[in-house]
Image 1: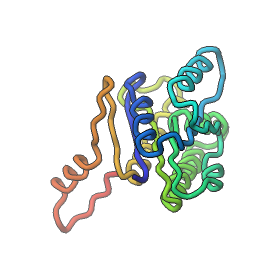
Image 2: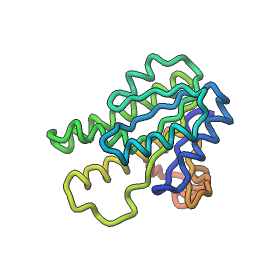
Image 3: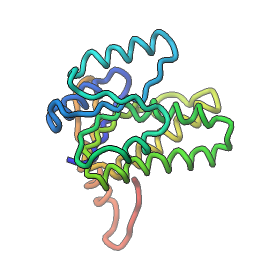
Image 4: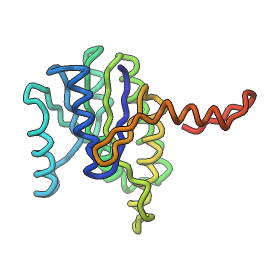
Length: 197
């Protein structure tokens, strides 16, 4: 199956859909790669709800800051549900917040590309959950704008590597990559290459 990206807004059903895909591909042999960090009681409750809704037989790995290093140790052909890319980006941005934005962004996007390259080279079934963050108002804080921009670029990078990309809205998944690529071809002449992703 390869790399699958699942996007959607808050409480759209993207994690539930990702779990269905992971179970279909890997059955009970799935690694649930959790990037969440307990920072308060609300986050603790969210993490516990996610834990309760997935099969108890799945292996849970908590990794907040260095997912590429973890994936280097994983066996070939494993099925991994990475929930979620957005939280992981937030962790990295918080850790690197004193850096210049361009330097921070370059380091973070290199980490995301490393994750995708490792997944591809090891033939992993990597299902990535990502929150849609760019459709609301412009964030008021500088760090909020950094987060929005890096999140959007990381999603584009993941979509470029992914075999399938789904948008989940109101619990309904829609496969969008194939249709999107058709539209790019439609608006691009035969002699012109346009890199949109």
